[in-house]
Image 1: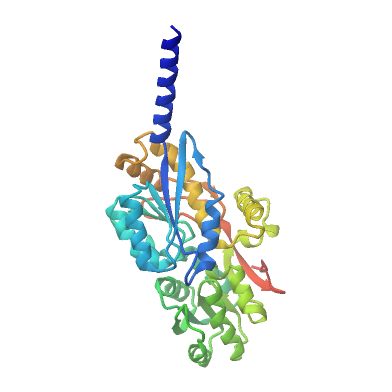
Image 2 (image 1 turned 180 degrees about the vertical axis):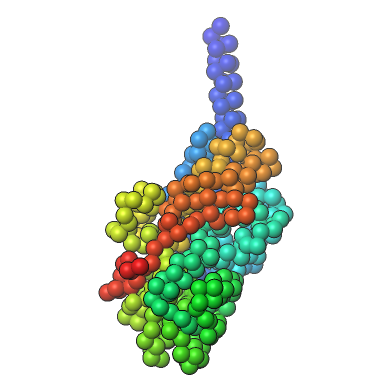
Length: 383
């Protein structure tokens, strides 16, 4: 009888171990923690530390890789994660161009990709490939709506535009220009700069020569400060607006006094002491801030929020997908994609998310606010 009990106990342990292995969800993470954009990739990688290792009845393993900001390495790593590791989902890559290069392979592998990038081009226009991609920052049209409204309230009638010469800058112009025109704001100059350029003086002088009421810069982090600074150095006195890509410490550090007064439509995350209690997602935003500060002794940049919100989305979707398939199977990945697309009124660090078949970002202006730079710090601007 004793032997029988031991055998049954061992059988139970073996079954539990087997179920534990079967219940393991594998999430690939590609973050550019070295190379050209570590200011983006490092906080994204750091944010993985804050993601849960257990979601419902499922254990979760995060397979984190650095693509050195190289789009070719992004593709190689994505293929490896799909083929060798059999991941159930991917968070990343960091850069807009890197993400654009990877999304086709993720669609071919029929595996959800949560892209913490700026450009809406990863999810728009929607097609069979992009239906596998979910963007974990607000779409450009959401931020652009806020900026155009702020310009209108300030009496802006003409604007000069300068953006990165990459998918981020190009998509921003395609989004912003028609929205501005519709609001009665004419774009009188349209320039580009390379993310690695050390000067945009020629572009700045052309923009000033067009005599716009305001300037619009579509950049990311430190590089967003370069054209802004040179516009100021060249004598432009009007307001200079920035996208949410400038809502980072690197922008403040590089721009210094030259970016004082910049007007940025960005997340309440960067002005935590000024979040009203009426904001329903406030507690989630503070959870990210406090968790990041505890682990890394610094406030989380906006880039960390993209990874953190990706984790929140997966935290909701994984238990739902588990009802239709086992991790590691196509049934599970299909169900995970469907569950992500069905996200409704989910609180995230950057606001509220409502996904649909046509909208794979899902944020609205509830988590965004007009921000300015005062005395070297971000603070809420007057609407």
